[in-house]
Length: 169
Image 1 (cartoon, helix red, strand yellow):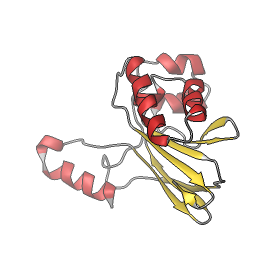
Image 2: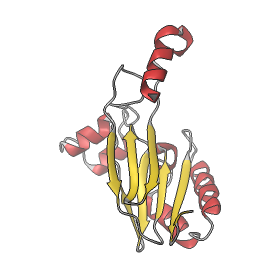
Image 3: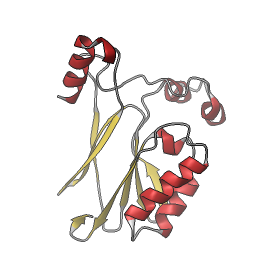
């Protein structure tokens, strides 16, 4: 429905022609966390001192990386690393990656834009989450501040979700 609305608006309003967005959402259910994903906004799970990327970027550079045409080092600085291959609203239909991830007490889920991941490396993100996991609002603020210190070259979005004994916090 979101795709239809964005696409329709960009089709009738010249000021929004070509408009689109990336989107990653998480919904806590009894069987786990349901992830919906389009674009390069990422979802991660922090568990037992490790951070696992749950989503694959829908980007040109990620496609080149997966096919072996780029190394991880080349991908970090590639001039087309912002080229998205799938987005909400750019076409009448969109293919959404959706899946369920198990969730345990103590897990922290992180949804973030490339404005964070391009400016702060995974080890530093994990360090902030691990040392502040009892205050997820603080985690969010610290990560945004770190991305700004790193250059703040893009929009920075960070959402955190902690799983407790009673579900999401």
